[in-house]
Length: 115
Picture 1 (tube, helix red, strand yellow):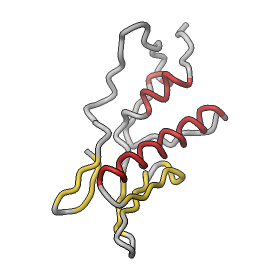
Picture 2 (picture 1 turned 90 degrees about the vertical axis):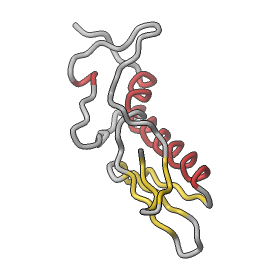
Picture 3 (picture 1 turned 60 degrees about the vertical axis):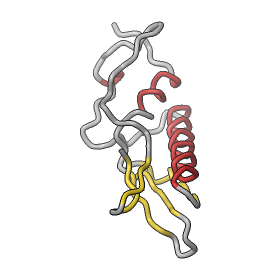
Picture 4 (picture 1 turned 120 degrees about the vertical axis):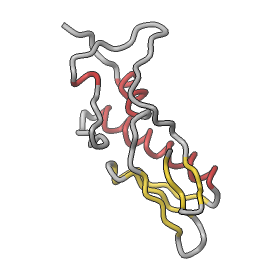
């Protein structure tokens, strides 16, 4: 039998998934970012730094709320959640590898994107 995953442990794993991020320029020059899989995770910002900070806070709040109320979490395509696979939660200093995704936004000549 696998040990129980806490919401906090799940949240740490979920925040490291390769979420699909869509960014647009608003008419007033601000950026608007949305997480495609989580329609309630939306952020705005006047700079890359502000947008990145606001987006990850919005995603964290949305995920935490869904975990607290046991709502479905639409994970990114091909994401495999360890608690759904029967993997035990990490104990102590262990960590779970869920991919090489780093929660950052980068502005390039092609526009803003998640990397």
